[in-house]
Amino acid sequence: YINHDKYYTKNQLWSSIWKKLLEHGLLLNDGAEWKRHRRLISGAFHHEFLKEMTPDVVQICDRMLEDLKTKSLVDVNIMHEFQAITGELIGRLFFGEEFSKYKLRGIPVTHFLADLIVRMSKENFALNVMLFGSKILDLGLTATHRGILSDTKLFRDFSTEVIERKFAEVKLDPKAARASRKNIIDVLLAQRA
Image (tube, rainbow, N blue to C red; front, side, top):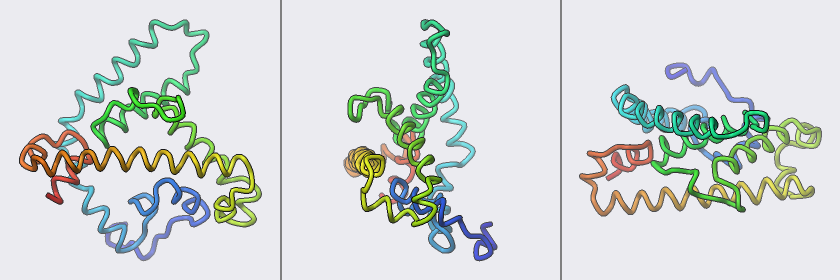
């Protein structure tokens, strides 16, 4: 794909609804813009960085699985628990934050994001979106559409706030940021500093 990107395109029906959440990120871009993003983020997925992150991944999984042991497994929604683990890993690896300590609309961010992704996935294949495209979502004609638009904005604002806070930390001490590189945002911001 890297050398022959002009021969590959992403499904516009699939990607158009996701642009609301992911905008112009690596997952949705094509061509030269994709290459630029790919180059920027490749340092964050370097073998050494991933090796350094392994203890964090193990610690998060162990902690959350230990929490599961304290619950009656009859009442456990395993999908909900795995979404929480995945969300916590994303929070730590990408943002260097414990997402479980944050809430959006009274829901832990990990569950909020998982729920938003499920709703967006369902809506992506809804008949009205299939017939009229994702732009119909922007009209906010249904409660589902308005909820997705509102929650997407809320999550994007939350993410922006976290990134801006990280950026301020890097500006205060760029050498420490380069040395620590504890998450993908730190790696990307250290490249800019």
